[in-house]
Image (cartoon, helix red, strand yellow):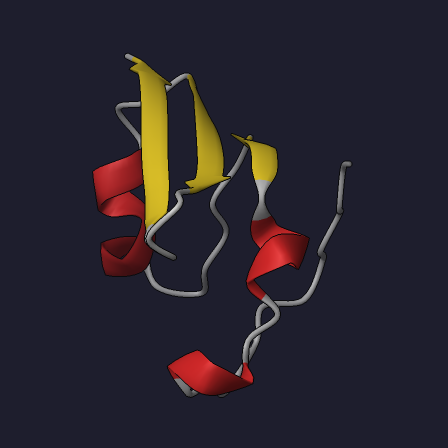
Length: 71
């Protein structure tokens, strides 16, 4: 699944844990770029070439996030 976003979200929304459909976020995610109007927001991401995350659900309803980062 690839999603392209051209306009940054002006007001990030915090979600309650019980309101999230956890299964929609399971699987492999590819982080390709960071965009912001402020340099400080993306400075930590400039060192990475690409990042791959895997989100897994466990038997005790804990989400496990595994990330591989290439610098």
